[in-house]
Image (cartoon, rainbow, N blue to C red):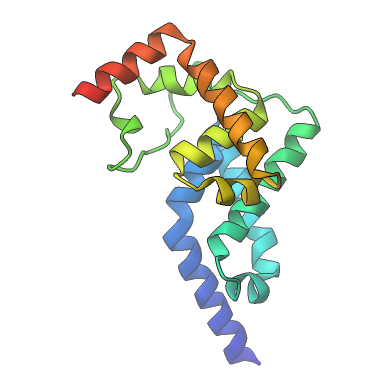
Length: 179
């Protein structure tokens, strides 16, 4: 019994170590604040650890964990807790570190993109983050959000349209694409 628990703990630890940066990035984009993102990932991993035997044997454990995280974020938002994407005058905070392959991270004014993302309603933000930042398929995004593929398409399209309507952001993306 002890050996199986130790093996399960080792498997869970390996999962967390391998997925931590991506989970943090997703949580940061959903919550908009470093500390809230850390709390969201921590609470998600607490829930997942309890059910790790079932989660670890799932076809796609990462998708399962992502779904738990999005549900936790949605519950928090339903309680009407205020979120801020970029803390003001908090220079001591450690900012999200983007993947080196992340094209958006190479944009000159990342803060403009994050501020624009903060203006989106939560479901549109979730759809945009999962589809375009996390590069999930529409089906994977629908599963993570707990909605239909049509709802994902609608929320993502509305979110992208709102982002495109922000003049400075559209110019930044255009300039970044040429570089």
